[in-house]
Image (tube, helix red, strand yellow):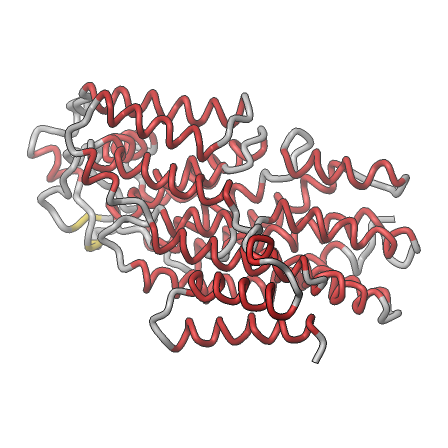
Length: 445
């Protein structure tokens, strides 16, 4: 059996094992990378494990460490309270606030906008009874909505690959297509995952930092009670609603640290992982109380899972499995079907790896196909961009992993992981097809 086929079979097998047995998929990924790389491809062990995503590892460790510190010293609760004051307690607006915030960060060049927004959005959702999957996916789709602006990392990268070839290219189409598609997906998610039940619900502006409040219901405008949310009236009875939240030294320093993280990554392109680790360590030096407990909040099981899978995908690329599949698709000779399969190739691979890396494979792989004139290049490039990024909701991709890692510790992460897996499966199946149907079939000429 050809090495390419064996490597794909092994991928399927480790997924089945991780689904049926309580074995971390990342651990299986490392074993598979070593086994397939050394025994099948002839790589040395060092080369087989060279695909370990060091940058992503540092990002996940640094961010979960930093925001665990922020959670333990009350800063996350403070930001949650301020967020609800911003929308005057109208809970229905909250998912869209985080969507827009993520989109803006992404559009102005923050490659890891989700890394900044998710650690704030997920505790917010937990506190006020918003569906965690809804909130997490709103953050991811928000980042994807702005991901291909002309000044974003993705937008500049795709333009840099396509424009030198002389193929027709539109930066406007590249920006607007992912924007519109992700807004539509977010709107559907909002309806399906219970966003409408938040309409009319107002919550307390000022839940005590570090606490959960003393109430369990919120009153909607039609008089219906909603479980799990403190009411504005009850909070007023406690004399807290109009009282500015207390901001201590630890919270001020943590807020400065979060601001430095946002500005450093967006404006100066500093490494997210190293910067967040540095900020977390500095906070531990300046405010050591409770820091030992915060270190326990690093999401090690999630980090193992994501890094193991990505390491095995790197072995697949080194083994030529990706090129083998791509060449087989182009050789079909039916342009529209080949375009659809190329979209699926980008989507499926991106669900298990960094979208930036997969775009670097998918678009160059499609260039000979685009130069043949079989399909319109403008629509095909936009479709590949959407197909290769919309699947970032997967818990194995960078953005999905950040959402999973940002899930509050008291939440059953295994259950939430399974929900993410189901949703990402739907997106992997439907996303590339949607991109192809909207952007390739009609053509842009």
